Length: 310
Image 1 (cartoon, rainbow, N blue to C red):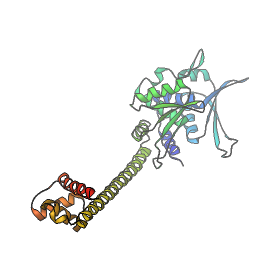
Image 2: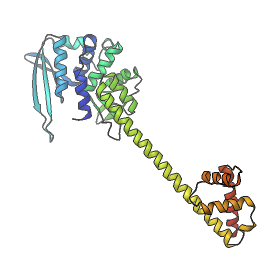
Image 3: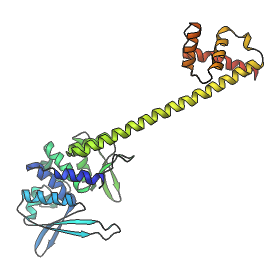
Image 4: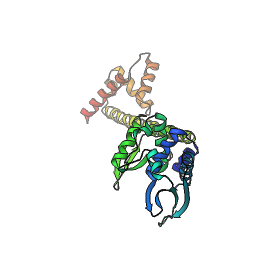
């Protein structure tokens, strides 16, 4: 099962009540259902690719309304032949849609009434319902953190973004193949969204995997830095030894001052040492401390003399 499927399974196990149940069901119906009008009257038809989500909608409907719900399954006519779970809701469909805040005398609303999500607990439940209906989240094992909810219209996308802003998620929207999508990219924000939906088990799994991977990446970056510094130090050492060889070939080393002769002798004795290590060696040999910058200045003088000779 995908990580999205695992998150949906966990969220569906939660059992909201009262206003929170209405808010979650409002999002589920808004994003999965359509109206069907026939000789028998008007029915609500909900379609979803998840059996768990379909059962969640059924439970919430039966919990709040006295309705007849017919359940069915069909297969999509595509290569993967995914199953689609259908719910046909008969009864006071207009009353249900009005109670859920998504129907008025003018017809279906593009977004629910504010009273549906007025309380923060209801806003959390609504976001959970929206994710169950049209959401997906990448596994933390992948290299790309991404959570999204397909919103359909720009108006509804802005509504979802407004709900997320109440919890400092700062989601963004993008249009993809004619439909608007609300998405999160930062791992910390995705973790916060999982916490909002009370998907605690998958939140822990997400954070554990993310932290382990980020730690591994950090260690790798530090190793890369160490290797780069070592290569840089070796190149500098080789250049210094080449400068010293030029001075020796011209018989000038014995004419240099004591400080430069000490540096030359130690570099030849410790060709792979860093400047900090050489500075420690000088302090041990002479009893006189020297800084890394002071040591570099001495090598700069040697290099200048070697360049003139070249």
